[in-house]
Structures are given as C-alpha cells and as structure tokens.
Length: 286
Image (cartoon, rainbow, N blue to C red):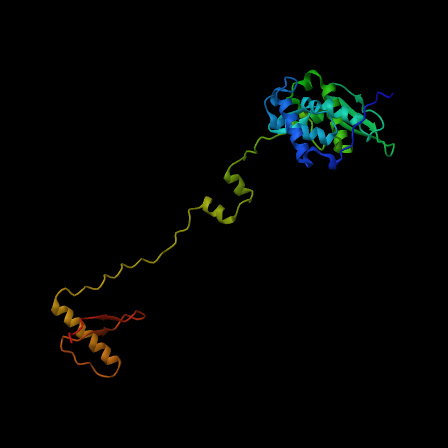
C-alpha cells in the first residue's frame, strides 16, 4: 500500500454549501472547532470564522483542522502560512517534482531562486527573490530578514513560484508574510498648494484666486420695495374708491361711467396689469 498523500479534487456538486443538510453539518463542525483548544486563538469561540475555514477546507479537499491551523488573519485579510502553501504545492499534480532552491551571494547581495518542474510539459520554472528586492519592497521591516534572511527569501520565492504557476492550489490567497508587508499607509500629500500651482496641476482659475485677490463684481443696487397701497379706513374713502374704480371700468368699456349713487350692489375695480378683477362694495337690499 502506498503512503503517498494526494489531494482530493474539488467537486462543486458535492460541496457542503450546496445542500441544507451539508450546510448544517458544516456549521455543527464549525461550532465544535470553535470550542476546541487545538485551533488558533483567533478562531476559538468564533464559530463564524471556523465555518468559513470549514468551507475553504471543503473546496481544497483538506482536513478542516489543518486549514484552521494554517490560515491566519492579518488586518482583516486571510492568508496562508508559507510552509503550508509549499506543502500543498508539493502534493499537487501541477509540479512533477518538489519545490527546491538555489542561492547565490550573501548579505545584501543574497539571491534565492525557487524552482520546480511542471508536470504537463516537463519545463523547469523558477522565481527569484533577493535582499535588494526585500529592501526595496519594505520586507526588511520584519526583523527575521536580518536574523534568517535566506530562510525568509526561500519562503518568498516559493510563494512567487506557486502564485505564478499554480495559483489554484491555494485558491489565489496570499501568504501571511506577503500580507504583513503590504503597504496600507495612506498617501500623504507633499509640498504646498503653491508648488502644485507652479507645476500647473490645478485649474488656472484657482491659481488666479490664490496668487491675486479675487475679482470684485459690480452688482446693481437692489431697489427698495414699493410700499403697499394704503387701505381706505373711513366710509367716505371706501365710497370714493368704489366710485373711482367704477369710472375707470366704464371708460375702458367705452360705455361711459356707470350710474352710481353710492349704494351700488357691487362695482368692478380695475386690477393691475395681469391681475384678477376684484370686486368691492355691498349688495343693495331688495
């Protein structure tokens, strides 16, 4: 009997998430893992996180506990431990050989290549990393690049090799080391606004306002509102207004002013241009 371990190909039709019974079974398993001391601290008591790990294990054809022990969360992003990624690649059918390394130089000139042979073509493929690259990319913020540089570069080069030629082996996830060194610092603006103006990267109108006083716009004076017409207050004034309105209406109609004895039932007053006809007065008793 062979002791060789092979990965189980993922078959979406048998996924735990595709049936209610499978999903419920996965959640019960996740709750069991969350209550175990064998899972990492960040998963203990977190049934939801364990549930995601169980579903990932289902996709990978992997043991759920193994996935829980090798998946890490860095700033809210999931990643794999490098040694687990290498082990998965070595077990896959993408490479016909195990991943190996060769090195050249030392200290700041150290270069490490990871290489393997593709199973389908027999081609040897490789990926290289170096201390110069580590410094340029900011990886050396991890103190292990000072204490064990060759080891760290081997992990990096192997991760590059797997991500280039076998990304499906790890479902496209990065390694924890790659996530840790991602630069997520917000870009801070440099220089001053005047520097930007000198570089002509802002609109000319903004430059004119910054360099000179804003233009003064001459505005016409706003006229005072006309006072409202005075309302008649006495009976004589009311009757005089009625008479004046009646006379104006009669002249416009070319019928002459209507007879008015001060007791007309109602008299039409001419409105202002465009306004409605208003009637004022009192109805004469029959």
